[in-house]
Image: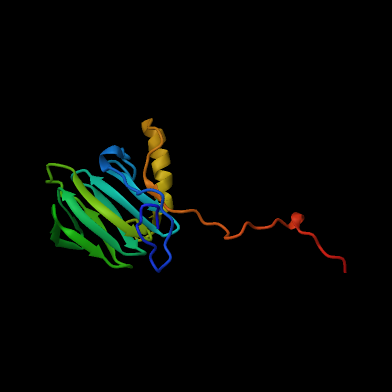
Length: 187
């Protein structure tokens, strides 16, 4: 509930002092973040909830290694086209909405014939576990990895701190008492 609410709802809600919003035009592109021609704009990275939202920008001909999703993914294509190597007849074009259930595995491909970058808005629950062509583990891409990629890309690109939304902070409901501060009663 916030101070602007005209009534008190008969349920509990998290306090919210402001609307958490971004304008994507104000979020810089993290260039070549996952390799040459694979860029992204971070919108949300919440490691505690295990969710991230990014705008992925892919150059023509890009192939993102095979990866397994530990959670569901929502994708909405804004520009360009792409497909999964495993489903070449299901090309995603502007206006395509894609839902990927948890535990799906595939290889992201952008046609070399594209004349422009492909731009996709993704909401990712959990992480992507990437493998090489022989099926060996390569990396994990999740919300905490995105937070660290933003830091390293911003430093490499000479950017100031990048504004994106992030989750809360885990902690104790009551401050933990240090062992040395406890008073023991005599026996």
